[in-house]
Length: 261
Image (cartoon, rainbow, N blue to C red; front, top):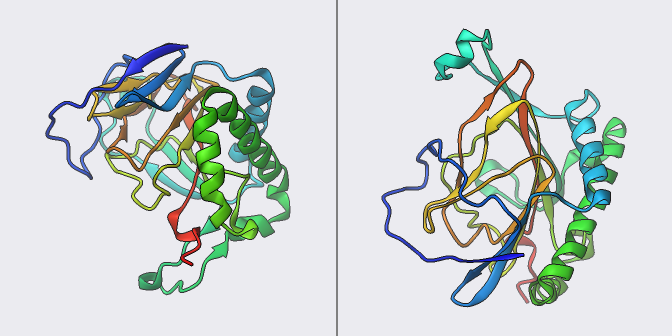
């Protein structure tokens, strides 16, 4: 795999800004290094087993059996989309795994997401859990020191809060272009996994302004990255045909589930 050394640059991006449409400049398999240490990696094509699991999870997620928070974006679409008759872009998300307490919202205790109790979502949940575990094996293969570091951190996480062995939670996003943000609630020293499924769409690539890097999140690609480390955002997603989409299957570790003892 190619080595990419990440060198920090000055920029004016702020959390909450919308991410512009940058062209990808990371387009091949690589390992990211910062300060001489590997911190993440990108693969354009996952191993076959992972691709099959991602196909299944994506199919289930897009079906009616999986509960989703849905919205419709009808404003601010590129004129080219309107010319092709694309009048709206559906956006959906689904959370699995553990949910941290949020007292300001009246949720004072941690919990397992209610989606786990939905009978029609069980195939999706199983596929996502297997995909998380295969992702962990890939991390162990490519970044064994990171795998051991994260596994040791997870010795402080109760088994009831784990989603796999290195993560507490998962979110699946359909056509969501996230504005610039930093995953500040994640465990520092740990990594996220972002698996991309897409069809008839362009854009939807992760941009990291600290390094001026934009990762080409093509279909069946995997990005492993410490999302707590830098501000990042997703470039605009544009279906190139009616029904086109860019879906991300994300696994992440929440700091709230580390033992405070």
